[in-house]
Length: 485
Image 1 (cartoon, rainbow, N blue to C red):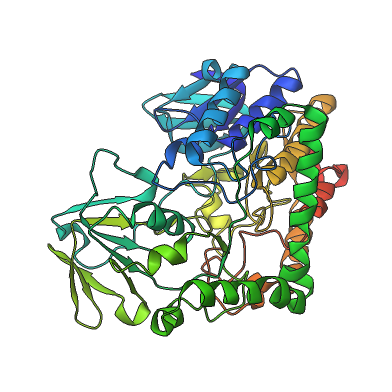
Image 2: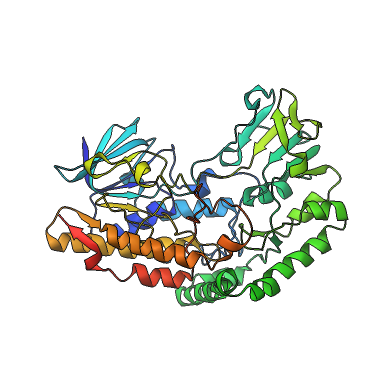
């Protein structure tokens, strides 16, 4: 039995932030479990052509780990380098077990510890369990009829096969979200034919990217200037919440009209433009930032299939559409996203009294501050329900969660108890507030169905307000909301 004070599941930014904060608190008795053969999470796993961040890099970075970025919106390769530098700087490789796929975690009521069962690395035990596996880590591939009969090559963007040469080939991309919007421009001029199967179009805004000059990169190495740039970007992005929640007029004026003009300017063909025009309010689904997507879609070798030409079935040669068209392809790329709502945690979690988390979350996932769950002591979920953020850096929210987690550990140590648990009343009040506020947002009333929503219809991916509001809530530990045992 491998016993630790803390076990962290996942080695992406969430796991790294947790480990760094533990080290700062003088807690060295912890282990990171990573199911893959390498560390780093999203930006080490997702290496598909065109992969890049959609939040400005000086803000989309760990606050204590500044970096001399080469451009405003970093590409995957640079994010991977940054991730690995953070890991090595803090000696996290020596504290990580890779190839440790968690099969189940179970709370031992008598001993007040978590038992973590893995495939390939045995069983671990921990007083504190931090789940940092991330909401965008379990890829989804729709089970279309005949999917397994396709004779060509197929893979998800999450597991891009770089050994396959797609140049000159006939390629189908299934999906039209954020990853598809990056892959399409990256490969459109290299393939023989590209078929984009789009269930729902997305609103697209120009991407305000730019390369940093050598002088500007030197300035990024000056910590006060880096911090000032971070906060300037932060407050600029925070204004978006006004449109998402408080003013549809502002959303229309400063976002939707810009997106409509962008579409009209870059897609002159009225038939294609109709296919690419969403029927919902901008922001209801994730907004795509791209200055290259529309130019790629108007290329003569690219065909956009909308929902009227959707996939009826997949056969040996390719795709049969609902209007009877046979589309022969050599490669199918699944750009179909992740189980990011009802699958917040991908493995079974068994809490007090043998209660499965899946049962507690049967209607929809819910947690106090998106982090703690009644009946599951000493368990903290990073990027849990309603911690997603559609307008700024997810790392800002992760670091806010760490404030609450660290405060909880301090209180636990000071109390002399073995476990800390949020009360059902506190969680119910918090969740009630979240979904009451959610009614005011475009994610609830924008006229779309998105991955932000659970099967129940509750919007459980997003926090319904300013990110500084979440940080304030997470930074004020409420002893009366917790019990110690």
